[in-house]
Image (spheres, rainbow, N blue to C red):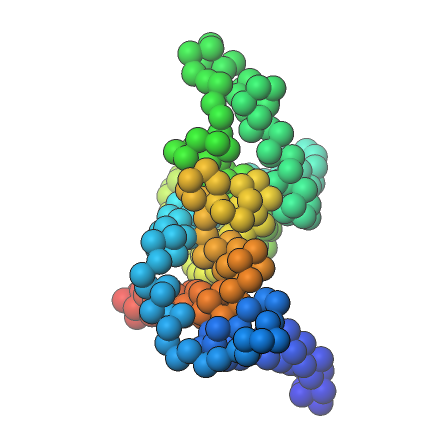
Length: 291
């Protein structure tokens, strides 16, 4: 009976994940092009695409951007989500309104969010430049956020944190509401203040929640694509400062027509994400053993 219930999900995973990935592995060893040439048959090229990848400076730039995005966005988004969850877990008036406000960006598709933030980052009439000028009394700005190589990627990070933090907030909120109240009552009897209760009760009890949030956010962060593609185009404008592995793979496959090379990039991308996930799991298990 259990297999009957899980069969639809298994079929979908098989059709939309496993088969395409196996096809990508096969294509990565060929010179397949997007539009086949009847006079030039697709050939097996061995490891040539992978050799090209490790000599490709643009690919290294994309890998660096992906890791930079993960290193900055994951901890910031996780900490902010925990802070918001603690806030909306309080017994306040209209707390459901705050929960809705913080979660609403998650239900808006990233394409729409990227278009809206493109207007917000407008160097002429964008609200973000107006805000920066207001809080600094006109000392800073205006900035050309999306055309400055030093500002474009941080601008995309800020957008991504804002759009995704509501998802992690809901997970943390569920974790907070699962903590037994008697633990806080015992802490109060022992004279623990709010910070000590958070440090010795809330944070340890949210350990499994935090593990899930960090793992999920890391994987989602590596998939960075839509906002870069919409706001900066397939080349990761300006000067390739915002290009990521997925953007580069799609650009090579569907703009340059190099399906074989793009498939090799996706295989390398999969291996990198898999290794990072395994390292995270190993690190988490070591922490559990110590505790």
